[in-house]
Amino acid sequence: MTRKIVFYENHFIEFYQIQNDRVKSKIQYVFELIKQVEKVPEKFLKHIEGTDGLFEVRVEYQSNIFRIFCCFDEGRLVVLFNGFQKKTQKTPKKEIQRAEKLMKAYFQSKK
Image 1 (cartoon, rainbow, N blue to C red):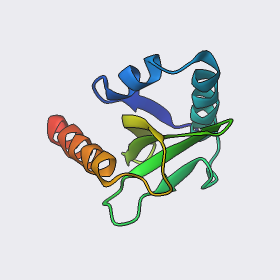
Image 2 (cartoon, helix red, strand yellow):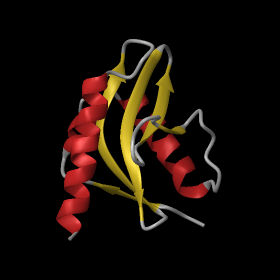
Image 3 (tube, helix red, strand yellow):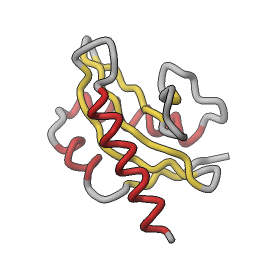
């Protein structure tokens, strides 16, 4: 079983391009894990409570924490929205709202 990872617009790519090589390779490692492993540990992929199907890919490198929003589409497809570096305990509301808006736009664009 493999999942296919797809990017919606350029939101993730813009975030990815400004990261250093070590962070990029850690992100790639987590993506490979998500593609291959049937039950992805919550340490790497977690549903965001209070949302309708929004998940966050969780990447940690040294003391830095990164989050990349995504959702599933047609069972296997992971669609990546915005990413950001986490500075506080809680995921900022505005980042979640932005991801929800992008998710809505993604499903609208498919119709």
